[in-house]
Amino acid sequence: MNNMKTNTLVHLYKQLKTLWSPPARLCSLATCTHKDRNDALHPLWQSPLSIPGGSRQSPINIQWRDSVYDPFLKPLKISYDPTTCLHIWNNGYSFLVEFDDSTDRSIIVGGPLENQYRLKQFHFHWGAINEWGSEHTVDSKFYPAELHLVHWNAVVYPSFEEAVMEGNGLAVIGVFLKLGAHHEGLQTLVDALPAVKHKDTVIEFDVFDPSCLIPSCPDYWTYAGSLTTPPLTESVTWIIKKKPIEVDENQLEAFRMLLFTSDGEEEKRMVDNFRPLQPLMNRTVRSSFQSSHVLNMEAQHSDHAQQIRP
Ligand SMILES: [Zn+2]
Image (spheres, rainbow, N blue to C red):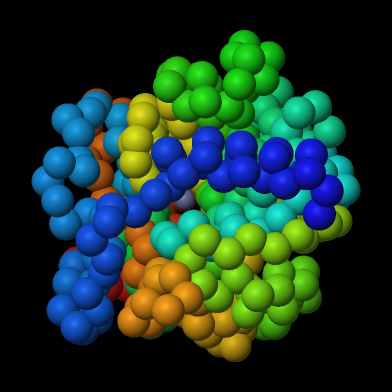
C-alpha cells in the first residue's frame, strides 16, 4: 500500500472510529448465554448512558397494518460503481465494507429522498442463532441478520461527519437476510472474512457491487430514524426493503466466526451485534406499496423466519 493510501486509510479509520468504537469494556460472553435475545446484548447497550432521550430512534418494529401507503413515494434508484469499493474493516462490532465517497460514483436517488446520497459503507447485524439478529422487525418477527447500506447527503453537506449530525444527512437501506438458498454475490465477501477475523484488521477489497445484495422487488417501508450505534444521531432516512434476500447457513456461520476481540485477547465471537428495538413514538412508517391484511398473512405463512417475542 502506498503512503497516500495508508494516510487515507488512517484518516478514514479515525473518522469511523468515533462512530463505531465499542466501549473499552468487552463483551463477557460468559454472561451472554444466548438463552434469550435480551440476555444476548452486546455491552455497548448495557449502559443506560448509551440511550439518549430521542424522539426518532432506531431500530423499530414495523407493524405492517399500521404502515401507510404513500402513492407519491418514487422507486429507489441505485447506481453503484464497483470500483469505488476500498476495503473491509473489522471495527470490533461488525465488519464494514467501505467505499470511496469523494465523488458521486456510487449513489442512490429517488424513493423518499429529496437529494442524491453517496454510498459510504455497508455492514451487517446478526444473531448467535437463527432466531434473531436483525435490528428492525416486521410484525415483531426477527430475521437472522440485517444488511445496512449507509449513504450521506453530499448535495447539502460538505462531509460525512457533518451529514451524520443533521436530520436529512443520512439514508440507510436496510435489507433482511433469511435462511434459504446460497447467495452467490455474498459469497465473494464471505470468502474474504477470515482475513478480518480480529478487531482492527483491515484488508483491501477492490471491486464489489453491493447492489447484488439488494432484492430486485422495489417495495420498501420508509421512516425517519437514527443511527443504531453511537452517536445514535437522528439523521437517518430509513429505507427498509420489504423482501429479504436468502443466504445459506454456512454463510451466516462465517459471520459468526468473526471476533469482537483483537489478536492476543481472549476470543469473543462477533454475534448479537444489534441494538434493541426503540419506541415508534409520534412517527408514521410509510410504504411504497399497497397491501392488505390478507397479503400480510400470506407473507407470514410463506416465510420461515422465526417469530419470537422478546
Ligand atoms: Zn447498522
